[in-house]
Image 1 (tube, helix red, strand yellow):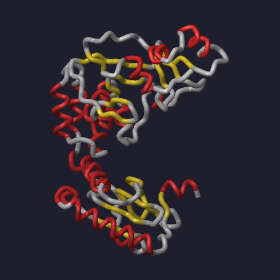
Image 2: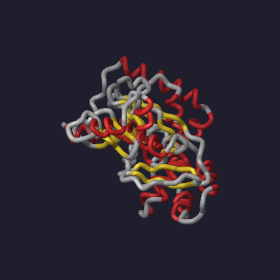
Image 3: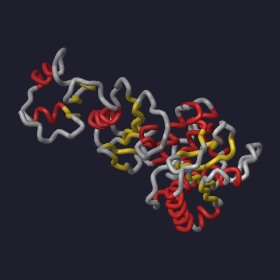
Image 4: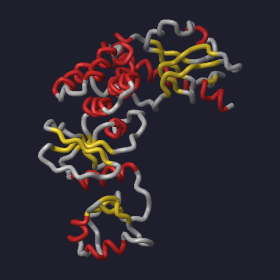
Length: 303
């Protein structure tokens, strides 16, 4: 029995099995108790007897509902590198002319506005703006809605204008809370992180930790870094301190030997290449010198 067309994920449909010469009865036997396969949902089989990974579950959902669907919500954001919790159900956009079968663990939504998907790991994902808004529409907590609508901005995946345009293009029913959340977004604060990630995307540097509090050896906070490379002790500050935040002086960091790069949001917008060049230079400098004797809050807890 050859299954040469099977994807590396091990997800296969009953139709593909029949084409490979596997009868329905034999497939049912292999998916039965003690068998080597597992049926994930009607017509979709995992060619191993194990719990599916999240990616396999997404691929199975596409196999079940058809290639014209798009995965949206948290999974679409996570596929683009956004650090947000996975949802219990897989959120799918389905063309309005399609029948939507009830399926445990799936949340299909028929729509007349199917977005142009992006294929990642064999899964079609909705654009970041649509995904964030779809996820926010499911939320009731205003604070959580605020967080969700700002995610694609924070990670540099779209602009506030694109979010607003996407929201205006959709059904206005049930969108009041999301619209209110968009009005509360602080563009400067939220865009800064997105702009910074775009700067780093063109740099040959490893990924930093974000929003890190830096402490001396006794655990006393001495500074904050919007981005922090812990292995070498490089700090990057690009946002103005929030009102009421601790008044850290840059000298407190540099006195420890920490290499500090500072810039403004305006510089992130207008001269990103110059900022990137300065980061690369500072990274090389920090790598040549001993790591400063500083801790972060996370490392203090683990010490």
